[in-house]
Image 1 (cartoon, rainbow, N blue to C red):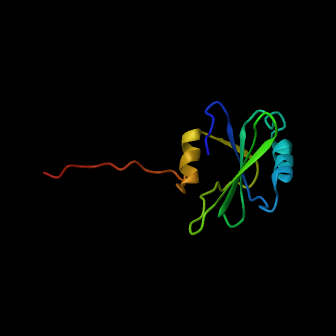
Image 2 (cartoon, rainbow, N blue to C red):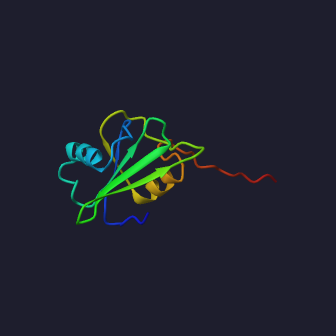
Image 3 (tube, helix red, strand yellow):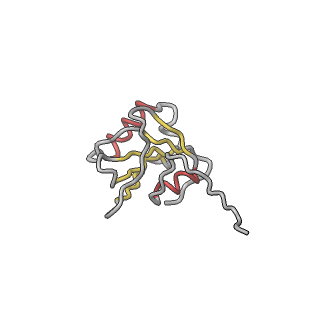
Length: 114
């Protein structure tokens, strides 16, 4: 998936019913961010099993839906139960690779042994 850098990425916190398709997801996005739905912003949804992620966006002529399903692993997800979180492009790319961007990662410090 090519992500336009001039578009905002929104994670819809909580769990979404993955049986929903374009119309249902667009209605959720419209309810949460009415001013952004037709801006081309990306709206990211995750299902209960955390194996399916859907990304909805407007491409000037209609809504598009991108779906990624993991076979063995699960996607990391925010612990927040409600609301919308904005995430940067770099963090989103890590997220779709399965890297938990929601946990604080400690920087490893190396010491030399003489």
